[in-house]
Amino acid sequence: MSNVDQKVPFTEAVEAFDPLLGFEVHVELSTKSKMFCACPTEFGAEPNTQVCPVCLGLPGSMPVVNQDAIESTIKIGLALNCKIAESSRFARKNYFYPDMPKDYQISQYDEPICYDGYLDVEVPLEDGTKKSVRVEIERVHMEEDTGKLTHAGGATGRIQGADYSIVDYNRAGVPLIEIVTKVVPDTGALAPEVGRAYVTQLRDLVRGLKVSDVRMEQGSLRCDANVSLMPAGTSEWGTRTETKNVNSFKSVEQAIRSEIERQAAVLQSGGKVVQETRHYQETSGTTTSGREKTDAEDYRYFPEPDLVPVEPSAEWIEELRAGLPEAPAKRVARLQEAWGLSDFDMQSVVNAGALDVVEETVAAGVDQAAARKWWLGELARRANEQGVEIDQVGVTPADVAGIVALIDEGKINDKLAREVIDGVASGEGTPAEVVEARGLGVVSDDGPLIEAIDQALADNPDVVEKLREGNMQPVGVIIGAVMKATRGQADAGRARELIIERLG
Amino acid sequence: MTSETGNTLDVAAVARLAELARISLSDEELQRYSGQLDQILHSVDKVGEVAADDVVPMSHPQPLVNVTRPDVNKPCVDREEVLRQAPAVEDDRFRVPQILGEE
View 1: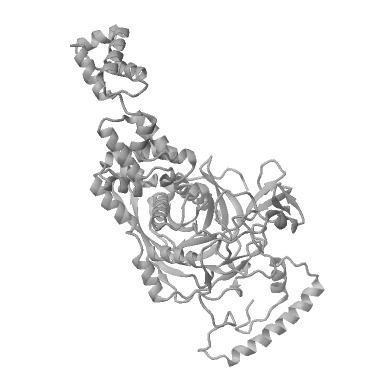
View 2 (view 1 turned 90 degrees about the vertical axis):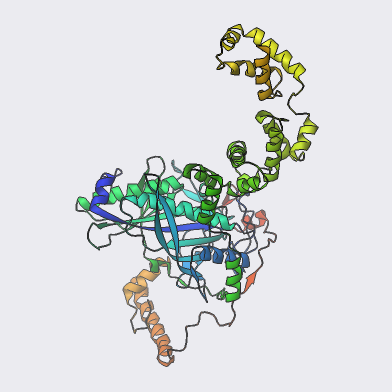
């Protein structure tokens, strides 16, 4: 096995071969408790503090299914236009690997809870238009997440060469949903973009259901991408590979592209594609060989004897269907039109997870541009810094509406608004209360402002000369000096008016 | 592995199962167990002879469905107690031997 794989340029590869895609996406549910026991599911807790006899697989312990996890799964299935099985069962997937202390994972095998659905994916094209591609869903099933292994000894921190491993079972048993597509044919040269659009829009859909954080970087959304090639003009499906470790939307696109180029090179040189798991390498944008794929029967699935079937009633399903939010694609299209935004600007709102907060801020009477400016700027920055969702920064849409109103009334400026946000986020009250308590307010009394302006004009005679000649471009220098002298409390608009006045 | 169609369980199949179950068997044991397992499978096959098409396969002896619990937390087990059960511990985690046969 050579370390550097041969590749065929992408355009050449997709001329000679038709790519066939398939996706397995895992979503960690954000339930309070685990799939089969009452342990918490929070990310980042001290190792092995969220465990009990059930998720440690101790003898005599018995799993019981989390009702909310079933509901969340049915919601995902319904949102993906799936049929919901009248009767569905859990199965044991047997394997020897210390990430599961039971030596099996409870999953679903031949009777998944949701099956036969689809997601219509809007794929952005180079010319700015979009192409709709239907991705058919094979199944959506419930299972449990595994523990986290850290490989110790050896130089690389990887399993090869490790002397031993250490295991944290906090994640073992966290509800995990697997969404499996059917083969996605006929994507041609668009295959990488289709992959990216599918995972992105699936994320948006699940996020809209509020059943998961769906954060790829934290592992609550994981994607395995299957790729195989079919010689153009034939119907011979090639051997597929499954690429793991794809940790961002961009990586989905790149992993598919890279795998198409690699497989095309293997086939064109007369070789055979090996059925295997491959690993995406973020730094090089390529995939490397992992283990050869074991056949499904190696897992010796059998019905889980400790759990009884799940048979959701028609009434329950209809109740869940009635409670589904507007489909994200429809909602985005509706808001994009209402706000008059370009595709790019709209996608920025969606990507920041700011759709809800911007919508609510606009509903509170704020102009969409101002709402987007604060949520995608200052507040997104804070969310990012704190590693939380944008609606968790301690500032509500009503607060933003209050801040924008204060700015519009000339009581504060953008700089002071950031201080107001500090105050609101640390629980000092409404924006108006923070302004009052901190004595923020811009200087509206012209006296101190005029004093500062006169000083700034005196300090910058060259600028004054240009201004007198009618070149207003360097006025920012004076305003900057005034802002500095008033510690940011001056109203820039009023200062500008006064500067012009003072210049006569 | 199934004998529903009257398949017999040969030595190779038992050797494969033993490997998957991480059980080390000698050639003599493989011979003996494949004979015994084969016999068990054929005995179970007899049930299939009397089961009509309208009898659905059973996976659970209790005629229960939808046994669930509400999504609430209950106290976990104290970590010290948990780790006391482990043969080896490092850094508050279970220490396990080198993992072979994986990537």
